[in-house]
Image 1 (cartoon, rainbow, N blue to C red):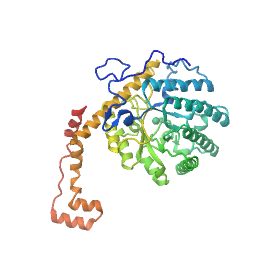
Image 2 (cartoon, rainbow, N blue to C red):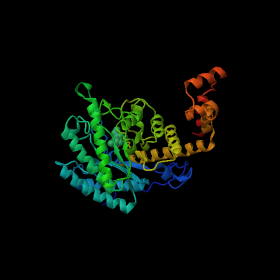
Image 3 (spheres, rainbow, N blue to C red):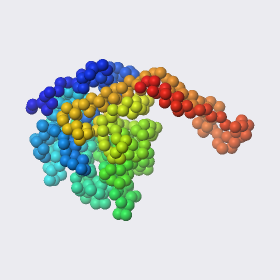
Image 4 (cartoon, protein in one colour):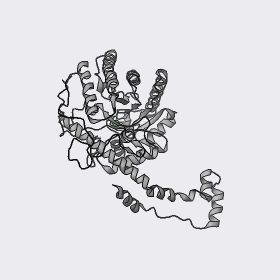
Length: 436
Ligand code: XUL
Ligand code: CO
């Protein structure tokens, strides 16, 4: 097969002084930062649905994206051709992972049996390419939101036959993910929510979603898939309200339905901001519950209120993400999947490279800055010091559960007015800026 990007060579690290738009200024895959190679910290992934499939259509106009290798058909041949484009792209970019939905890599056909057959044929090709290149599947997932049958949800559809279809689809997607050595499997509940409560039995829908996920856990055990399941929170879009609205709601759902040990969270920046949170908030909430699994790396637009899925270029954002990841001790099965698309105006194939290079460089800088902040230690020491009244005396007794209200009343009557130091927010913001 001829190359899809014949004019583009492998992207190399050229250092911060380079003026070459097709060179890395900061991402140097094998450079060691904080005890590990950059590629091991960052574990970048290419999102098949955006990079290979997104036409860049929006609600006001047709797609603009130029994909000269794609004949636009729904054929298995075309689907197979795309797999080669994906692997050429990953190779030239130096990215080790990719992620897909079943229907991104292979077509939805007239029957489930035909769709499964097409999926197997494309998976054969993916397996060959993975073997030949050493590239890996970060996670797989099933698209349970695009086909019209899912217009009122999949696992939360009021129709039992839709629930059954979705289950069959996830069964197959799990089998293929397992076969391709996928390191995890993601559930994003695109339409698992409601458009109006006037027609919705919320309790029943949530019970159904939990039953569906329990079935997935049973099946995962049955086929011997050991990777984690991820839930990807998002508050709305396309539904008015999605049940997995943010980290806290997902964690509560998982605990309520006894699913906590089988799931981690896949946190996406644009979803966090749609939920009215910062990305860092969502990551910290997941981490505090021991449930931070993976990241969909992108960003939204401050002025547009929807999921614009832009490539992340903000060094403040990537620094904060990398601080949380370093605190966690790094990814195990997860990674930084670029769930991001180029702008509709950036329609040439080379724009896909510019976009990924920018995201990778932004995260490389975030990693170096976060590592320097941690090595410096002042920020960490300040936070430790801020809580030091709990390290000994009455604070240590509180943390150990040795005292109750009566003891604390007696202690306060004896010790008088409480003491608290300044939070020093501005000083700490200045400190962080020393490194950026
Ligand atoms: C949609 C979204 C999805 C998931 C996978 O907003 O983020 O692409 O990442 O289904
Ligand atoms: Co996503």
